Length: 54
Image (tube, rainbow, N blue to C red):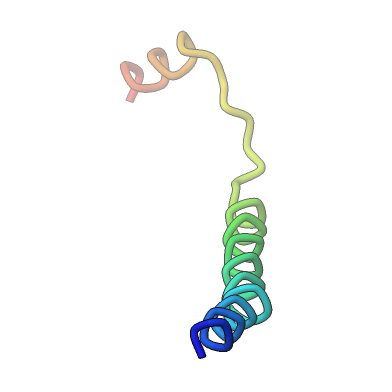
């Protein structure tokens, strides 16, 4: 009986839960990569100049 329950729990975790978690993590990483802006970061001196100029 215990062996059957452990088998079902192992099957549920490896076949259902882990793929869902992996898909979610990959989706989050892809979403972050697509939401990045394409502008250059610029140097610190340029940021200070732009802040003080305006």
